[in-house]
Amino acid sequence: MDVRIGTTLDGQAARFDISNPRTLLLVGDVGRGKTTTARYLTRWWLANTARHAHVYAQTPSEWADLLCSVERPDQLHRQVERACRPRTCLVVIDDMDLVDDEQLALLPLGTGTTILTSHGGNNFTGQTLLGADLSCVGLVRPNHSDASEAAVLDGQGRLDWPIDTVAVIADQRGPVDFPCHRWQAPGCASMAAAL
Ligand SMILES: [Zn+2]
Image (cartoon, rainbow, N blue to C red; front, side, top):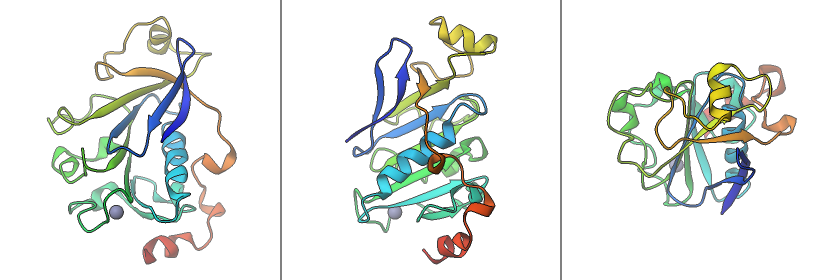
């Protein structure tokens, strides 16, 4: 099912089909809504309680309010999803810049839905993602843009984004979609550990 995440520069709704085994790569500068968009899609996924998610995040506390397993990216050591029922599993890597190519190879690329967020787009050096069925979305804000974002808004690409990146202005989200603060999730660390 398509989930709306924002608006393209020509005014169309930007959507991601989260039911298909696809990979969504979110790139963009700090504060453009990469983690917020990933959290929104993850919340949408988890609304069906027959499904679950594995999240790897540099700041696990930002995800601690969601009922899913949360670990740091450096804890990604084994094949994700191998023991999971097909189509029930979502894998999220928040801050994939911290994940090397060997670890990316552990992701269910092409067989499960995967969401990756990256500070820069071209920080992954290996070939792992090149053959993947990848949707790359570059998040921009419409106002107060810096020079490189202004170029994107003018219809030019960015050198630090993959070719074919679609520029999107993320939808405004409610507070529950913003990264969780430590004080908002009492006891959630133990909940995540129990999963
Ligand atoms: Zn799973």
